[in-house]
Length: 256
Image (tube, rainbow, N blue to C red; front, side, top):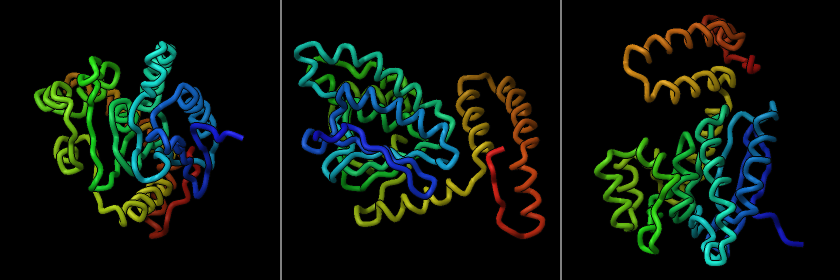
C-alpha cells in the first residue's frame, strides 16, 4: 500500500504534518496539496492541538518546491490555485505554525516556510527561489517574500536564482533561528513546549491582530490594537493568567 504524500499525527498538543516524499526531495505533489487543508481543518477543530509543526521526511530536503514532473504534461496547472489557497490559509491560521527545516528549502517550499510563524532551520541547509533558472518566476510566494524581506534583497534573491546559506537566510529575515543539525530537534521541542503552554485564545487573537495591522497606517493600527487588547483581556484565559501570576503558580489555560 502506498503511503500518503502528507503524514499527520498529534502528540503532546502538537499536530505534526510531514511531507512524505523523501525520494523526490519532498517536492509538493497534487496529493500533498489536497491533503494539507484537510489536516489543517482537523488540527484547527481539535482542542488538544495548540501548535502545528510542518517538516519534511528524511534529512535531505524540507521541500524542493512543486513537482515539476507534473508541470511538463500540464497536470500541475490545477494545483497552482490550490497551492495559493494553502499558503494563504497557513499565513492566517489561528494556531501557531512552526516550520522545521531539516534540509534544502526551494521554490514552493519557501512559500510553505514563509507562511509559518516561526522557522527553525539546520545551519547547514540551503534556501532559494530558482524558478528564474527554468523560465519561471516565484509568483504566489512573492507576496510572502515581499512581506518578510527588504525589497532590494528580495529582488536579488529572485533575479539571480542562487542558493542561500542558512546564515544568509537568517540575516535576510527568511528564518527565525539556525542551529546545528544535532540541536535541531531539541531546539524545536523546547519551542513547541513553550508555545503549547500559552493561552490558545490569547495566541489566536494576538496572531490575528499582528498580521491584520501590518499594512495599516500607524494611527489606525494603534486604534485597532486598542480594541484587540480589550478583547483579549476579557477572556477567561487572561483572567486565569493574571490570577496565576498573583498567586505565584502556573496558569491553567482552557482556550476560552
